[in-house]
Image (cartoon, rainbow, N blue to C red; front, side, top):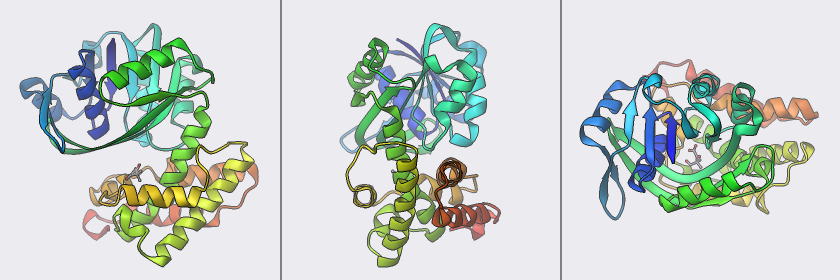
Length: 309
Ligand code: KPL
């Protein structure tokens, strides 16, 4: 399958590398010239717990190098989704599907607004990856990936993409309730990301302190009330226990929001706690804790890098 990946950060590179190793024709598209050059010159080095491997996806900064693809995967930060969706337009053939596995709420809808809802597949991934430098990533952990049609139902193309990812070592399940998947992951990020960004704690440390456990629980409980009001059935039983379990399972991680803050970048707060606040307003559900978390992260984004957590 010819696959174009928009955004060759840690996750985009991981997916691109694994798919290329499985024999797929993969193009990585990114603005970071050094990373693109390193991949084309020396291959993409993937460091994993058991062994290090080198994959050879093609990489480019120039959209026109790629042509049309059978599958486009969007892996940019949610702050850049609208631009990536415009980019995806140039990669579309008659049957191209566009898959988003990004963090946050509203990415699938933003992509659908550009390419049409019928092309969009959305999902979540529990793969872990860290960018080590140009052409080098670390594969941290291999949790499951779930994908579903934006319009619902189990289709042949969904099964085909799930099988393709699974063959590449990215265990993927085709699911028929994409809203449940996205809200399930959103609530995990609502509970962990802003709180780690504000405190500077690693994910696992949130579960170790009574105070952070309490704030996490309050933020998650608000999110569950919004999900209920939106008619979404979550993919797990006790949401607070689930979020704490993810924090413990990823104990050594600095969350993506903490990494963005300490790296001097903008965060995905607007697509996580900020989106939850907006959805709460839509359904008339109060979300004061998530509002405060959003405001605090936005305040931290304004600080110079050296004064951030
Ligand atoms: O998705 C994550 C993130 O950091 O964005 C979690 C699950 C919290 C893992 O760090």
